[in-house]
Image (cartoon, rainbow, N blue to C red; front, top):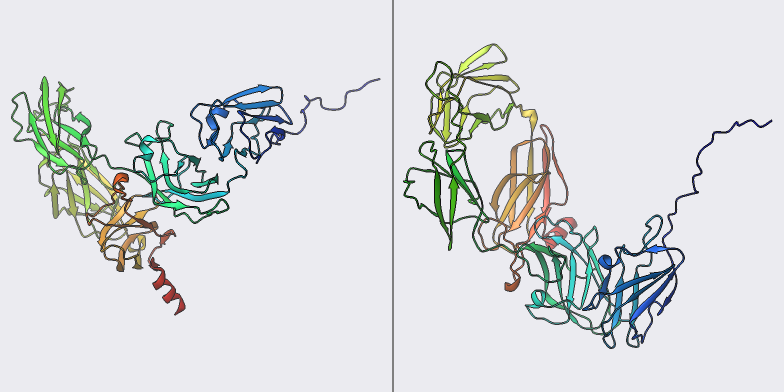
Length: 538
C-alpha cells in the first residue's frame, strides 16, 4: 500500500545563520556618563564565544592590567581592576573577539563607550598610513596618541589612545578628550606598544594636533603618515659563505665605503681577486688558484666594525677530467637573456667564476639555418663576455663556440657550446616621452622607469622640470617613480625619528603606462598644482 517515490536525503537544517549577535541589554548603557564601576555586563540574543576577545580587544585609554571575560549562558561580563580616570571617556573596541557560537558571525556593534564625567568626548582623528617608499597602504599598524610633546614617548611610554589601521591603511581615533596630541604610527614586531626593536617601522606627524573644545572633529585633515624603517647605522657581516674551494663571499647589512680584510693564519691573500656587486653591500674574494685549505681565519674591518670569521675545509669539486685529456673541464657560460638578443645590442654571456682569457676567432654564427659568419668582435670583463654583431631583425641565430676558447682564472675551460636565439625587430619596441614638472622642493630627483613587477629598467638624475624620452623601449607596461634627492646622494634615504627627519619624498605616476609596438606615447606629469591649473585654463 505504501510506495516510496521521493528521493530520501538528510535534513538540511534550514538556511545558514548569517546574522551577527545582537546586544539586548548592557550595564552600563552604551554612551553612559558618570560611570565609575569596574565591569560591563552584556546580554546577547544568542550564545556567543569570546575565545579571541583578549587578543582583539582595544581599550582607550589603556588599562595597566588586562581585563577579564566571564560567560554565563548568553551573558558576558568584562571586568577590570584598574581605577578609572576622572572625567575621561573610555572606548572598548572588540574587533572580531565576540562571535556567535555556531557560524562565527562577528558582533556588529563592536564599539562600546562610556564616560566617568558629565559628557562623552567627541574629538576625532582620521587618516591613512602608507609605506614611505611604495606609497601603498599598510594594514594592522598601531596609531598611538600622546597628550605630550616629548621625543622619548614612543620608546618609554604607553599611548593615551590608540587604534589600528584596516586593509586600506585607514585609522579612526574616536571619543578623544580635548587636548593637543602627538601622533605616531608603529608596526611592531613583538606585539607591544613601544618603539623598542631595530627592525620596527615607525611614522610620525611632527607638529602637535590640537583640539580647542570637546566638540571639535578633524576628519580627513591629517596628512598621510609615511611608515619607514630607520637605517641601521651599525655595520656588520650579515652572511658569509665559501664558493667551493675557489673563494669566499661576504654580504653586509648596508653598503660599504671602505673595507680591510686580513687572513690571520699567515696565508698570502694579496693575489685574491675582488668582485663587488652594484650597490657595494656584497663582495666575493676569488683565490689565485683552487685551495683545499684545512681552515681560514679571516678578519673583516669595515667602517668601525671588526669581526673574525672561521672557515673550515670546503667540499672540493674541481670538475671532472675528461677521458684522454689532462685538462679540467667545467667552465659554465650562460646567456644573460636566453633565446633573445636586441637587434641593436650585444649578446651577453655570464660566467660563474672570474675569466682570465678568451679567443672567439674560431667561433661562428649560423643565421636562419644556412648563412654562417665568424664572430668579428667580442669584449669581456671579469665575469662575462659580450658579442657584438650586425644582427638582422627577426632572424634566428645559432652561436657555436669550440672547445677551450674561454678560460677562467682557475684553468678551467669550456666544452663545445651552442646557443640558439632570435634577434628582435623594431616592432618589438615603442617610444615613450614624458614632459614633467616636479614639486621643485629640491634641486635634483632620482628618476626611475619600472616594470609593473617593480624591476628598475632605467634610472637617472633629473632636474625639477624637463623632458625624458625612451626611443627603443620594449613593449609592455611600465610605471614611473621619482625620489626627491634631498642630500644629493643619488638614492632614497629613510627617516630618522630622533632627528625629526622624515623619509625622502617619493612620487609615483598614478597610471600604468603601456608601450605599444611601433607607437609613440607622450604624456604630461605635472606635480606643481599652480602650473597644472595654468595649463588646464589654457
